Length: 202
Image (tube, rainbow, N blue to C red):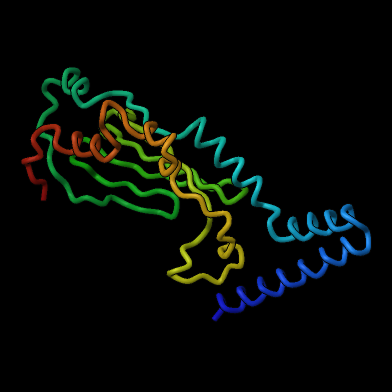
């Protein structure tokens, strides 16, 4: 119901914008029409340009995977790490952080950070639980608000024009999320099974 109300308001906004822009052109020529058009655009879409510019800058400059230590190097540095046991997957979750055990030695940590416009930073790390060392890190960004399919009552969530998915969806940036032919999921599985993954911890 709320969504229908929002759509109705948006339709009225479009009609009013068309009428005012037409009046601006007839009363003040192209300058008057352009001024009205800019005003009506900024009234609703003021956050569109800043959001897209910030998203593109962050994707181009910060997004991607950084491998600080490969599983092979870790095994060389830890020839006798002890028994790496399997554990229950989920450790704990909050609104902005989720932590999952890969096994008794490694965990995977997901963090989410929101900027002043509708841009989210998502950080995914594989961490050595014993030393706290970050072994692999993935940084990604997306934009937009809540998923409308599950419902929302916030007007800002209906700004569909702000929606941008993962930086990797742009073909030119997809190579940033692969290192030596491995994705973040691949590295996660390699660390999860680094000692065979055969010992179960109850």
